[in-house]
Amino acid sequence: MLPWLLAICLFWSLTAVYLGGMSKDLQGGTGLRQVIGLVDTFVLYLVVWGVLRAVLGGVAGGLGRVVLPTVVTVLLLPVIARVGFGIMGVKLVEAEGH
Image 1 (cartoon, rainbow, N blue to C red):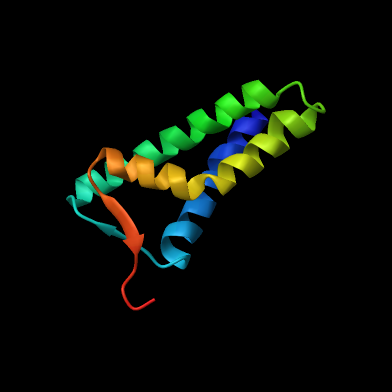
Image 2: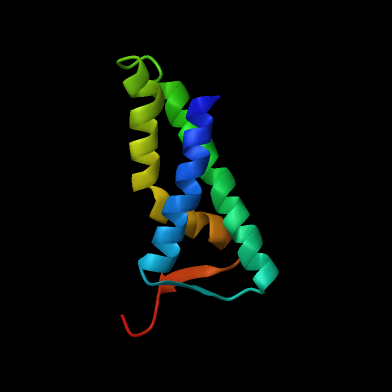
């Protein structure tokens, strides 16, 4: 259960940094659609992490069950965010002026 808690905590921290600190802007959709897009992104993140954990679980013990899935999923966060928000019709674009 602890590895899942790690993935969940990392998602919220890294998504806040990615969306807020990396000059990303959400275009289109209402506030409700944007919130649902964030939840969709969260679900996709956990699905990708879980699949990678299952696939890489036999690789070097704890490294394949926690570290590798976490690193790969974090690197895929921009793609996962675009898909998650895109499901609700919200575009993730660079903020103006940056």
